[in-house]
Length: 281
Ligand code: NAD
Image: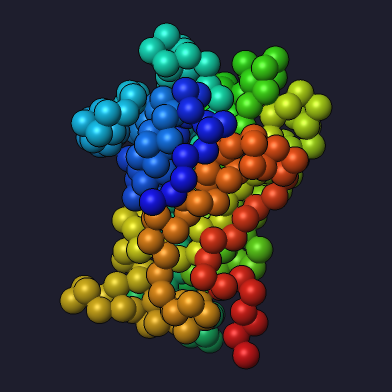
């Protein structure tokens, strides 16, 4: 069990996508640390399940239905959080994901793919898919930051974005997701500089590979065995396993608490079992 980080006790954490696999683990741990948790999720019922679990363990949590791409929703969520829990001290921009129309079937283009109707090549990708992925991963972090960091500008605060291993080197098949997450790393740095003098720290966590809803189709075959892509990932991960959501929590607490990372801003921390360090040979 992780130690208690005194700097977090009694503060308010807002977590977008907080009922997702990775961010619900974060929500539960931050609640255990004594933070008051607001889960902002498109699907409020899923958020409520996580909030109920937290409350069942003696924590404080609310769930707010909120599409992070709708500024009106986010502004409404801000009012609810302020009324129920107080001003936001920590914003985690966790909502993110992919779209089938922005994913190629093959890792590399082969002659003949253009004429093959059964293969979705780069040339078959749909702008709506690309747009969706850019909106969700990049603009979906921008809007909540605009809304929730406004009050932080007068009292300090903390923003943690969620990047990916697709950011430093793009991953095959997912060009939109890779570019959007590279945008997250870039935006993280930009925001950290912009807000440094008013005491808002902005960092990102880049998870390695975790088996979750968003990538299940890419990583598992229909019979549940590892796909070729998953085998490749494990072979490229020196620790030779997928991450567990709990693997992110130590880094999260360190970044969230001013006492432990008060002079850290503008970085993306890989939590990846060595994936990023490994050249493959
Ligand atoms: P997940 O699909 O379990 O969670 C994503 C959550 O975001 C869901 O609760 C979903 O309802 C919510 N969401 C989606 N669109 C939304 C919207 N418009 N408004 C509000 N909420 C919305 O996925 P996860 O793997 O837990 O992903 C969490 C974050 O981690 C994402 O940003 C993802 O890109 C990133 N990530 C995941 C992995 C991995 O291996 N799973 C690796 C690197 C980065």
